Length: 249
Ligand code: OAD
Image (tube, rainbow, N blue to C red; front, side, top):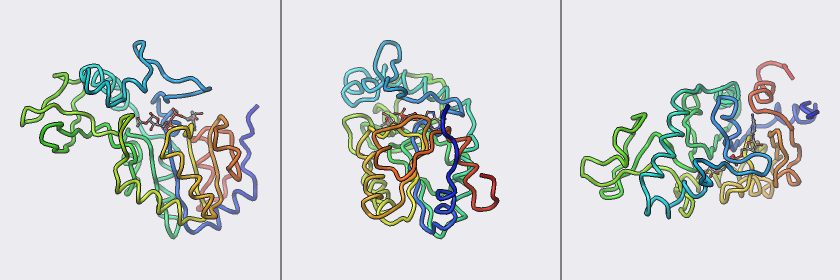
């Protein structure tokens, strides 16, 4: 039996907080129907490949068609799903605090679709592409792909505009995320296994800077010992109960 109670003290901290930052991971989209990458210590394997191998610069260089097949598979799923109650709760919170920053590791764009206005996307966006020849970035929504790998109007190869294993995070997004983690009273981590760096460093930065660290995840993670509170529950069940507007907890 999981403990899904929201402690009165957590509720009070949420009510009092003025500056709130939130980091989301794949788990927030799980209830929309997007499979996570890891659960119960196991990593996702697709067509016999560990996903870390498919989402890597090394495989992109060797076999872009395979990398695009994997992203095409993810794009097909994401194109069919809807934001859930957790995404919607976060979109509501953006108007409820003096300062609110939403940082995501997700590339699915569901926070935008739920109405969040300013989302720091640490790992890029699956609906954008970048040309490996001319460097042009553009939106690219074709599902399924008609050409693999797809090409730019300059004839260069397009790649998903996402951060692959072996690559750095976009500098500006990372800087903004560090600032938001360093200057908040409450940092909430939702649905991340907290094993991928540097994103997993953000809650540590927040905690060191004096923020209250709240984790929401049905499983414990390497972050759990550092968190002030971990609510062992699903994002779409817990987040809507944390509301500034009405007492529903
Ligand atoms: P993971 O797939 O590693 O972890 C998902 C987490 O969500 C796990 O800790 C689950 O317990 C939790 N979870 C599952 N269902 C949930 C629910 N309904 N509500 C809340 N939590 C739930 O996903 P990330 O931590 O986001 O990077 O993975 C980090 C990065 O690894 C991803 O951004 C991706 C991947 O490689 C790139 O593609 C660059």
